[in-house]
Amino acid sequence: MEERPEDDQVAILSGLDRDRAADVLEAMQPDDAADLLGDLPQAEAAELLELMEPEEARDVRRLLAYEDRTAGGLMTTDPVVLGPETPIAAALAHVRRQDLTPALASMVFVVRPPLETPTGRFLGVVHLQRMLREAPHESIGGVLDSDIESVAPHDPLLKVTRLLATYNLLALPVLDKEKRLLGVVSVDDVLDHLLPEDWREGESSEEPVSPVGGPASPTDAPGTEVSHRG
Image (cartoon, rainbow, N blue to C red; front, side, top):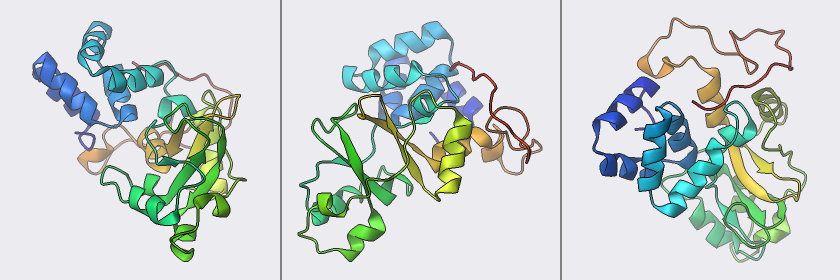
């Protein structure tokens, strides 16, 4: 479903009965479900949220509260989140999850309990390549990268894009003022917002979108407002 053009996603979802449509949304990544609901009429989106399982609906509601072209609006709330005492062997098993994109499988996010977003205090990340070089019985807390860059939920797309490019990262943690992990913005999420809407249909006639809106340009500058979902 997520791989289809946005217009097709809306048409498919609107053509399903309400219960089935809610099931489809529950099976999607929370950020993709939030994007799709943001394209629906407000009343229809609210009805589907009520039909979703409370836990899945809660994550989607959190994302819908953020403006679209911000870190909070882009992030997923379901990365690999583990405690520092986790053995490397167990962490490697977690990154083999079939639902993870390559970007999200490239690192695990290490926090104090609770381990579900919003988590306890964020400690750092452990990169997949580092785990592959360490002994399986070692704990991930001993091989932390605690200096990784992070963003706040209201930081604009331009800042997220620049940090990913500057530090050659596949994903960035999104932290609140208490340094709790709220979610993760991956390079996949950013590209979905920079490429033309019809890019999945093949060769596009449109120009790539700038992180600050409009066609991409080498002289893009910050300072424009962001739009809300929907």
